[in-house]
Amino acid sequence: MSKHVTQPDKHGHFGPYGGMYVPETLMAPLTELADQYAKARRDASFRKELAYYLRQFVGRPTPLYHAARLSKELGFTCYLKREDLCHTGAHKINNSLGQVLLARRMGKKRIIAETGAGQHGVATATVSAMFGLECVIYMGKVDMERQALNVSRMRRLGATVVAVTAGQQTLKEAISEAMRDWVGNVASTHYIIGSALGAHPYPMMVRDFQSVIGREARAQVLKAAGRLPNWLIACVGGGSNAIGLFHPFLKDAKVRMIGVEAGGEGIRAGKHAARFAQGKLGILQGTKTFVLQDQHGQIMLTHSVSAGLDYAAVGPEHSQLRDLGRVEYGYATDVQAMEGVNALCRLEGILPALETAHSVGYLLHHRDRFRKKDLVIINLSGRGDKDVQQMEAWDAERGGAR
Image (cartoon, rainbow, N blue to C red; front, side, top):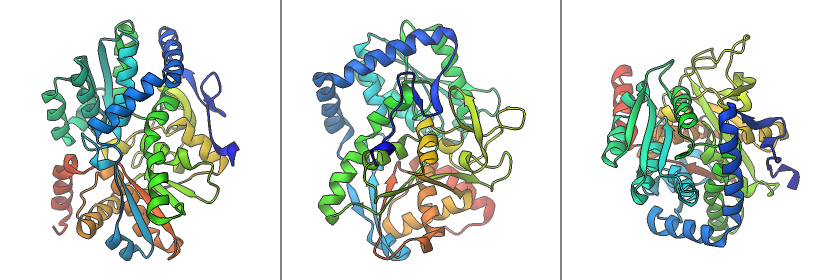
């Protein structure tokens, strides 16, 4: 199965995907970043410092929890990888911490980032505050309204939050604004991309920082159950939490994997963010991958109840893993995601983020394909405090029971 352990070539391509499709002014800083990261990952002192902060500040390792009542409901054994218990409430800080240590190593004094659901913004504001670095977060105006709690958290941590009012006013536009900032400030600024997308080396680098999830889960499930899981499942926006769980298991031929995209209101143009269901090969914001676009190559509108999955492209490594048949990709609708929220709340006493809830909703609606003896690990990528107001509004609009 080693052929399925995907690595980019020297130009950052995962097969036909990936690469560096950016303005000429960013080629030099991206090349420098790739070189600096290659040196850092080989440096024992860098790895030691990262491990220290992951343990002492982030709170790793996160538990692998046997969800007994959810398991009974589904008819097979489910474990939850509890990334919601990381400091700041999601997996995002694993990557933000790694990149801020790299930025310090490179002598950068200013940090910028984009954010959709706000968790990457909070994580980046947090690590910037830790090390006394200036921090600017770009966020779509629509996302700021539906994630007001996280906007307040970022500002409290000392970050400047810039509202992006162009286009759909969500994640895609926030990334575009962050890239414009970086073009003008490359000498002093490091751009912490929050997911496994964008130009090389970001997809590889973000994956490496998030792979701590899968390394821990692999050791934990062997200790708890005495065997590897039959299935791994994780939601996929850009794809960092999913690739972080999946990558350390890619050599394990009997471990099957499912990435769950946002089905929104159904697979109709402009009503979802399921790139593999309706997308095609294209280039968006620095990388070649599956993109939701029309026949003229124009980026289509997207929709998801979850701000973190509401994006028109997917990380290039996921595209290659799909081509290889190593990972299967499905989707859950907004309705199914909300059913996932309610199930996890009422069965396990855990309020998941709307992004994570897509995985639970997928399992609820596809339970018949799993066997009683199966063991499934769900990556519980974030907690749902940030989504409570949106959940309440959803119930009010639809007369849902509380």
